[in-house]
Image (cartoon, rainbow, N blue to C red):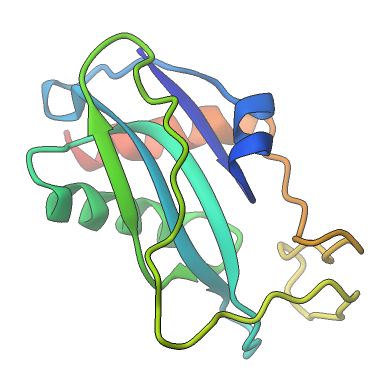
Length: 151
């Protein structure tokens, strides 16, 4: 069992997380990951996301590769550009605080309201980050997608 969430920051992740049952022997590790992403609608705005769940953590590279596949397959039509991931083994052990790796080019984060033609993209709020609360239905769908990657 691992903590599971997909949010804008660690505090939101802690508040919104659910439990994910890691059913496959290849996903016996829990992870906490951070990464930069942007919507595939021509936007140059870069967001930061935090995620937790089950993944194959045989190597950090494998874990990031699997998480990136999962993230990019989500219906929100976004692309993950980098990944910083910490793995652990144990019941709900993935409660780490993690951030993105430093970059020479600072990502821009917009706090203004934007317009898009993509119906899946939510409009950013006027806080310091876009708010994307993932419902339990989406978390369960995420678990099904990750499980499908390993069967």
